[in-house]
Length: 168
Image (cartoon, rainbow, N blue to C red):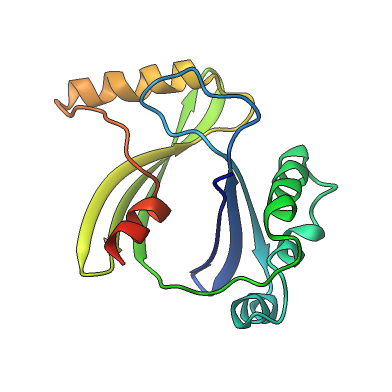
């Protein structure tokens, strides 16, 4: 089971993010699709998780009633790590620009990323975050059509965490 958990700091706010495989395989080609949960956490909780004093599950535990997604993600993480602490193995820097657009009367956020991995390797990518009310096939067509107009070929990539491990 492939699970990614990260702690992130953005504008003096801390976030815990977890990505787990979807319940069923995605049938849309050329997209990376994972179930993702992200919650803002207090600085002291982030520090406790990084130091190994507290399990990362604590970051999500207060939010399981808010969302089926968070509940699903917590179960997936728990099945793998139980209550074990995380061990920090490194970091990378990601600069992101958010571009909100509307698709099928629903909000879609396009993210333009510049990521610097260990060894000063820089990657550029476009991501988009979908809410449950956005059709994934429509979103893919929207992006691919806009890329074609800009003469940019859309292609899948490995996750940032996979690329991070490649550069360690």
